[in-house]
Each structure stands twice: as C-alpha cells, then as structure tokens.
Amino acid sequence: MKRSTTSAARKKDTREKIELGGLIVKAGMRYEKRALLLGLLIDASQRLRFNERERVRLTEIGTEAFGYDGE
Image (tube, rainbow, N blue to C red):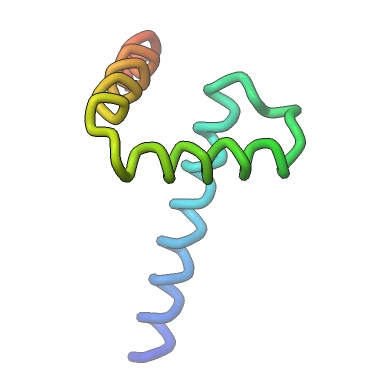
C-alpha cells in the first residue's frame, strides 16, 4: 500500500512541475536563463507578500492570458 501511495504522490508532483513549466512557456520566457526566471519569481513572491493590489493586478493579467486559449 505504501508503495502505491508513494507512486501516486510522485506522479502528482511530476504533473504539477510539468504544468508549472508550461506557465513559463505560455509567458513567452522559454529561452530565458533559469537564474533570471528564479529571480523574477523570488522578487514577485516578496512583493506580493505585502501588496494585495499588485496580487489582484497580476491575477487579472494571468486570467486574461488564460482566456485567450480557453484554459
């Protein structure tokens, strides 16, 4: 039983990572350096921690981007 649980958790983790990578592609940043991408994400994480208006603004941008392809 434990093995199947571990396997299911690994599959879920892998799927989530693939989906997150897809967001990088969708944002048009596939060929950017990983250090830049990580820096952007860390910076955004820090800014969003204290700025709800920025969170709303960026969420609206993302929602609109998903709307273009039906996701």
